[in-house]
Image (tube, rainbow, N blue to C red; front, side):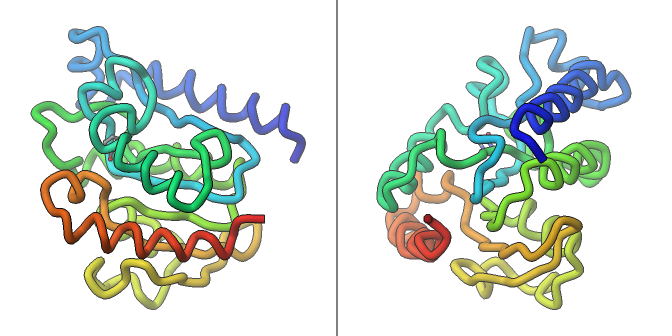
Length: 201
Ligand code: URA
């Protein structure tokens, strides 16, 4: 698929999410003048990062990972010589849940079809999940044998799977937010990020 076509299809998704009145998060977004956060980066990226849901900074700016967790993500990307523009960064849930709570089952069900479309448009070779929620969703989506395993067992591994468009590797990673309050987790994240180097051409 041509890059221009990908960009057009991604814009359609954005327009649908902007008008997603049936979402339990829609009212909260409008009331606070928040933006939905669709994703950011290269529409032809080999590596796609998937987080959970936007926080306050992200909803105010309409960009993923632009707060404290985003600074950790940038540091991790730099450690393997990648820039944000080289990859695509998104979340499962596209609107901010109140009080920084975890996304609910209902929210994941409502927003995840948009994520699946984004994956099939961008067609990454690697999907790096950030945190438990996106890991569980993606492993289930691809019906991976590891789908019931814990993030503590799977982090930093390359799991081969079959996407609609071909072969993809899933690399489960801890959420960058954990590195904000646990130095040992940052070391683990840095170590796990090295796995992504195998996919940098
Ligand atoms: N945490 C996430 O999971 N996603 C963001 O975009 C920001 C923080």
